[in-house]
Length: 335
Ligand code: SAM
Ligand code: SF4
Image (cartoon, rainbow, N blue to C red; front, side, top):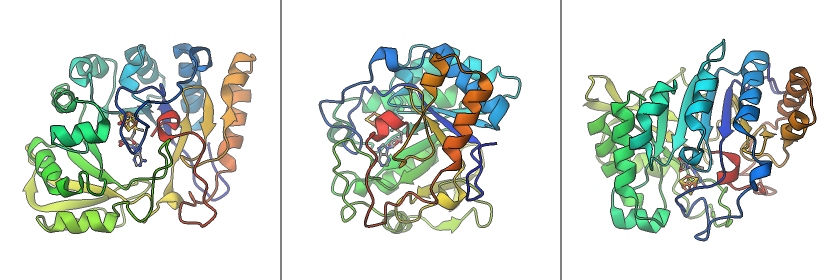
């Protein structure tokens, strides 16, 4: 088990497949991109699959989420998914993606055994998309969402980050769009994880503001009282609205900054270059790649991994005066 000293157990592994991306979302990357990890430092598909197997077979991982950077840019993605879902104790699998290329790839990903996707969509307006993501790709993202639903990668979830003065007026439009198509929308508070260190507490849109904006048009009723468990999103039923499949419609709000859920966290992260991080905001990493490449046994790797999780701090500390942003940006950690 991957237990820490506060009684939490990590069962949800977030694997970053690449730090590269074909968008440049302002809350994540600078316009010129970043210095990408050199290829020799990246885990190969086989190395990655060995670590996932150790996580699942020896350490109790039950859910594997592939992310990045943009995970659809990783050439071996279908093989990595297939290798994961063929493990004797099959973990649940999910993918967090910006959706570009998903329309084309969704059938192959479903065939490889992927269970579901989260697609990031912050706006429905092409001009705002270009301001926010610095690329003209909105229609590709919308096609990707539809392709994922058609391929059965459901429930399709949508992640949205609201930025003041940019897309914060679109919360209800995004919700209408998702409700009509059966996508489960989740708003995420912007976190201090951008490479440019441009996050400011006084300009971020809070969970409370998001909910107030949605309530101007919808009646939201708490949907997860007592059942939230380790889920970061507070879930709400949208009163009187059903998804096209007849199920009660929901919307979620992830108040990472103002309503932290660290006490129930069950996540652990593996970067594309083989470093274990026990938190998005961790300032230390454990180097599994050197162990792998140095000929360590599965048990030795599992031990180092457990030690990395054991020292996890109780919370992310964003709200402490002494908070320091991690040196790796979100795109290189795996969001
Ligand atoms: N490229 C993929 C995507 O955009 O979905 C996967 C990686 S991205 C880092 C994962 C998620 O993190 C996205 O939903 C994105 O909106 C979110 N994200 C990135 N930077 C963020 C920030 N500073 N605060 C909150 N969420 C952020
Ligand atoms: Fe790329 Fe995702 Fe970061 Fe946007 S949030 S720049 S899509 S990694």
